[in-house]
Length: 570
Image 1: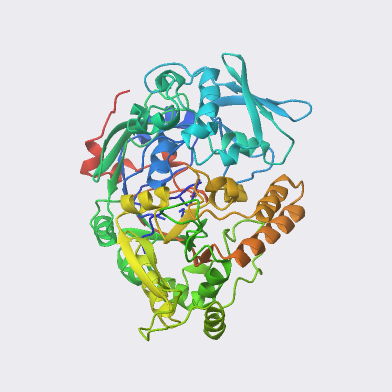
Image 2 (image 1 turned 30 degrees about the vertical axis):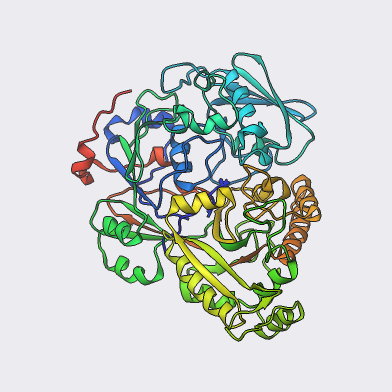
């Protein structure tokens, strides 16, 4: 059940389940950067991460895949890092990163971030406030096409009163001001942007060879093969315990599993139910099962792929989308594919959010009612070929599916069979991951089996399903737009109490469920197999690699590849 998806925002960004990829990683041990610097005897080892596809690019403001996010989170730093509690209200629990401290204005309409004077870019240039201001410009410039522009809408501007202070000014007070300022922006090097703007950023040198301030430095990227990072031994937060991180590309799940069992990789995420008995028998592996922040769905394109100014010939019709939703037995499909290892998705959200009302009832499964509705809309089988048609147009479409996700491929086949029973012909186009991402980004599809790995705050829904995210560069690939939905989301994110936020989000989820821009399927649990040679600590719920710089491989458990990475140089 390897599930690779354009993840962000968790960041998909993004999903993107979120996205939703096969990952192979290594150990954890929570210790601070200062402790890391003092414990050279504990340092060493190579972590191998096997991912289901190449990153789209390695520029944080523009990338939309999980494999890209892993690299970016290790190479770049935010101003502050969210804590393990994932509290998003105020600054409680946030830990200093590039900003060693911050000061709120008396009226709470601005926050001054005071940069760490020891912070350096990996090319040795000191970090300065202009880097923060330049980063904000890139993320919010509509010409750049950043999928994160929507998530920064509450910020009015960024000023630099001196070289070590960046002040964020907000349009209004809200509980998420601090979160908005630090969570989705990795600070970029102004001196390497060299005035590059707009579409040119996608082809700039930084999009392929990132230069950050993180505790790992980028070394190389061989497309279709691997990405390599090494420890920044002089990092301002202390060197990481590991010497090296290698990401290997493994689009085929069986290849990834073979690498794990054979010791070529250390961790595999999203183990399918069928493989769990074998994992349990392997004395070299531990298994973890945790709540996840992922959900997947069949997303309809509401616009004509060839003429976006027009509605899609099928999915521009809300009534038709609802009928198709009624014709699919989501519960049986999710049970068949995941067994007990996933919840039935309740909409564009996850149960981990306290703002999610788990009693929301989606469009019910009813084959008879779906047939009745299709008949009433004029979709009938006029020639007896088993496929309904209307005014000469057959009720036929193609679902794009990432081949690297066994779960989604299996679900697609089951959906195909169920829709056939009501006279709908659904073709399945199984794509390699880069081609799947290209289809999403270009919106050249009828429907996609997408997925999101969401961020710590439900606010990313503005980016993935809100009207603003349907614009060019956004990640609302199906172009769903409903101003009432947008208003409810905005009200939820501005609410001062949890009860108010929950009320508005519940209303928003009911609106989008009724509009049926997608059929929501599974909310998978996070299942990982970890080699026992790895010392692991607590994995953060939103991104399991968050504390990777503090992971350890004990000296007596290291193998040949660990020795080959010894003593990396700055």
